[in-house]
Amino acid sequence: MKVVLSWFETAALIFILNVCFNESYQLTGLQVCSLCGGTVQNTSDVGQFCSSSAGRIDRRCCLANNNASDPERIIGLDLSNCSLTQVKELPGASKVSMIDLSLNPIVNISEKVFLGFLGLNYMILPQDVVCPGGNVSWQKVEVRQGKRLCKGQNNMCNQTGQMSMSCPEHSLCGPYGPGFFECSCAENYQGYKCLRQGEFPVVKVFGPLAASTVVISFLVWVTQRRKAKSL
Image (cartoon, rainbow, N blue to C red):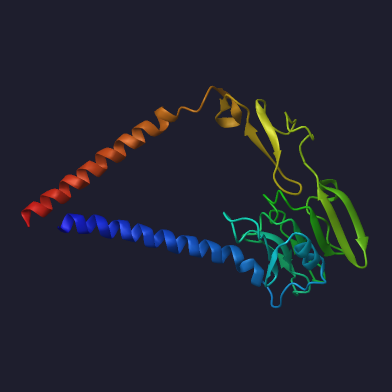
């Protein structure tokens, strides 16, 4: 009876930890919506974008309404007039399409803030702040009414999605945010700098790991059985 209870308690603990992890992830993802007080105004740039995208406003964020698998996906972020002097990170906002950071006394924006922001296509910044990745990373950059507008994120590869001089041989270049790109191995290549040809040896790598896991699990089960019998 104690053995069954032990396994039940383990399963329950795993379930509770999983629930807590998911909740903490969602909370962390939406913390960016509360970086400053207030809410997105309907007349603001992000507010108008949210309305045209059929999104819903949550504090300083516009969330997608048409994504059942990811109901907390942020598509618009309005952090204008928040007295921000620097921007180090924007957790949970990597899928955003529009960001407004105008009317802030920003003196520094970390280069890695927008790493992985593939869908970011419109930014509003203070006039003196350079667009992430520089002008070359955007299709159009203009200054208007004291604000710098960065429109249409450029693909930093060679625009074909094929081989790039910046990536090693046998690899493909892919965009990874304003001013960033990533290199992934071409088909049938893997390993350091994609130098190894052939498929990844799944059996050789994970086979021993799976076998050792089974053996350890069996030993634990036998030990628990012996303790149960002795009682």
